[in-house]
Image (tube, rainbow, N blue to C red; front, side):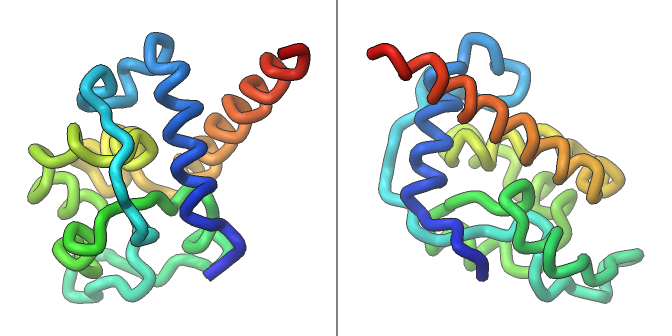
Length: 144
């Protein structure tokens, strides 16, 4: 794994929560979001994909372990997701995303019902948007 720690993901959720009015399209239910104990790091595109799933290939390590492909989740939900492809996670577990981290909600929304919606371009774009929001957050708090 890389140097991304769980507290960083909680901070990201805080930044997303603070910006929720501008980001509603990316979430299932941000207004009822609660910060809860989530300690498991989820690879939305799995580390060890089920190759039986049609067309599933191993992703490069740099992209697989990038911030854009990771989020925090409860241990129990991480076990349930297993090594399924993103679209399968979305389809099978769509009703639970409103109770998950805001970053995971955003990733699920980007995935929707198509595996084509979770690719290297989307992962990098997602990461860039999150990092831009974090930068803007820090810039807005400089004079406080």
